[in-house]
Image (cartoon, rainbow, N blue to C red; front, side, top):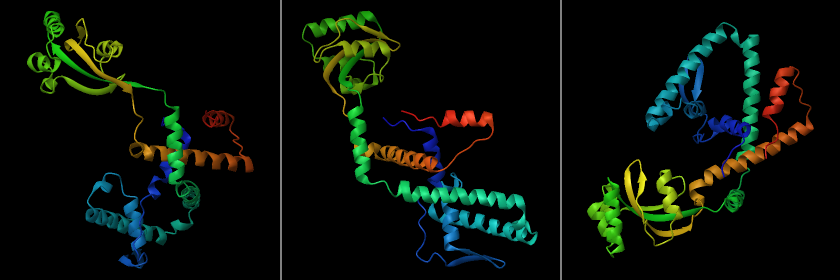
Length: 283
């Protein structure tokens, strides 16, 4: 349900650094000076927002100190670079032009994609994805696990004689969940080992296995207590992923519109082929 177009996802990742930047009310307050260079609260907020992921896990006060230390280091060497005239270096200007374009991309992305997504759009996309999900059956089952086939057959004989499954599980099962009467709860296909799953899903509600089911863990006697259609994931648990889908589609729409309005030429033949392959429309 939540497959993402790789190129669009990469664009979303580029923007991550912009999220969560909450500037202080007095954003121009000077918090430190390095010679004649000033570090303002807004500089510090940006430094905090762009901390290394490991440092970003620190408590807030430690994050501020780490960010301030980094900002001071930046100002120290920026001042040294200015004194050497590196601001006028051609390579520096080229890098700054690239960074400016990237930040303009991110700012546009925030305005027309991130901030443009509404809760109604996310909910509508969730409903669309849920409606497209294939129906999936889940069952509720219990089991009794023993070491030998003979033990399992003896348990089946006791069940045939009217013994209670839960009591037998508590008494004879070697599985850690024996105290819960062998209760495995609800599960869908793909959650259990193949032999167990094949047997359990072939059984009717209320029935127990008439022959032992062998797996790598031993021999099982299974009882299926309920069968039902599996519920889709709750909206709250996938809302953020669905929002990413809506953002992806908005971004792709904007990119396609921009490409239609501009001429994009890749002059290197090998690169052009790879670019076209990567950017083929996906279903």
